[in-house]
Amino acid sequence: AAVAPGIKQRYPDRILAMMNVTCSTYCRHCTRRGLLGQACRADLETLIAAIQARPTVREVLLSGGDPLLLPDEEVLRWVNALTALPQLDAVRLCTRTPVVLPMRWTDTLIEALATSGRVWVQTQFNHPNELSPEVQSLAARLARAGIPVSNQSVLLRGINDDPAVMAKLCAGLQRNRIRPYYIFLCDPIAGINHFRTSVQTAQEMRQYLLNHLGGLACPRVVADLPDA
Image 1 (tube, rainbow, N blue to C red):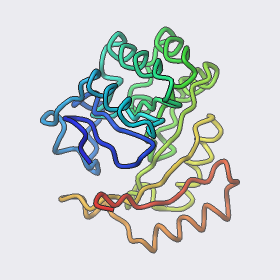
Image 2: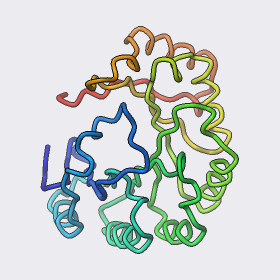
Image 3: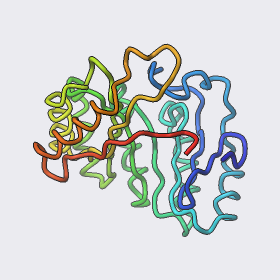
């Protein structure tokens, strides 16, 4: 449910803020692709007030768009203000820059983000070919700094719906200390039916991964139901 412009709460323990309305890559399968550039960016002071008015909130997702397209000073202004709130256990930066723009993550920025010990990175790798040497270097730097990284893939027909391809991705993520967190069924968005897979394909994918990967490399396979 909308809390304020650019701020939404779907679960009692976490709240999401659209920190930016520009993205580092405009994925055809994105549920927000028609909103970016038009949606309202959240206001930090309003977000803080909303969190403080909801004692059950213990986690904030900074999303968009892509927060990491903003200048370091702006990213750190938000992160420092939020990690200063005692009720929060985690501030999640939801960004595709680790995949498509790893050079965005300077040592100075990583060091500053690591200071609070409560920053997490949520990203989206969809294919093992995305695990480039530059990505692997960034993953190592984030791990050394103590910043956990989780991955949410989208199941895309002809891209990663081969169980062996997805298993290779998940193993590669674990090798680079990126947690394979979720695999989402592709949402029913206009114009992308050719990317969508069946529920049966997703179930078969889940069983294959359970049979071929250890628990740390095995993500949950889920469907995101916007009205649920």
